[in-house]
View (cartoon, one colour):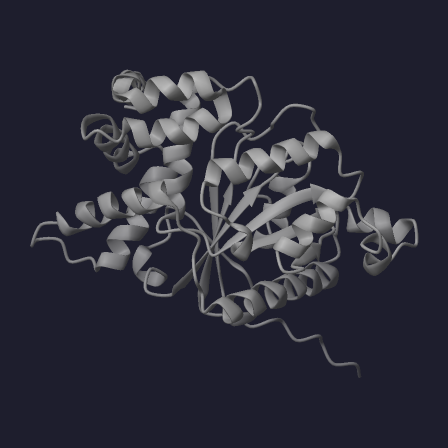
Length: 323
């Protein structure tokens, strides 16, 4: 008589973490933060769903960005917590300046003190001039060089398999700009199939992704990417945690986990950060990041000290809209 297939243990299953999950169940575990970036339509959201093992982010073919605001997904696997941030189409011309300011603070706040891995998601189709321009804009936005923490993630692995093209063959003679980018990222290239439906294939692909990520983390000693804005946000979040009253019994890590959800869900901690950046002269710092997206002329106004007032106005409107 054939034996039944053994069910995977809890440690082998990706366990969903939501805002309703008790922070005491996971806050003390090692957290791995992953940032998804890339041009609209390349499959950032679908790749995030592949990593999390569930449909967390809205994903569908569209010429416009489906993700309008930074979204966080979390899961627990093998006694680690994986936090995935799906970014909006920051370089879409449909996003207003005020929304850009808010989204930068929100995304960086969720990732504080910094992402361990930056997945630059590319389609396996041609690496066009537009793609080159967008990648350069992302590097300018992050300010510090992120390539040490970056993986080039190609979606459409199933298309390559359908055309009987191996990954090695695909990478054999890439365009010069793409070859340079891969070299700068130390050859860290990953291919994913976001259309897998069979459970065994889903689990196998996740194990391949995990092995790839874990190798990079081990090599870097779990170093995170940091820039000036991330450092300032981390400082403010530490200050907020230190303000807890003696009546509160949560650990610092539990408080941080709650703050992370508060930022992701447009709650009190996000309002706290926005007000700090408008009141305490950090508008110019934020403006330097916004300038990368909306142009040098707008950035000059922020750098000259006008940014704080603009951010303050955006904060007041935003707080009213989410209160």
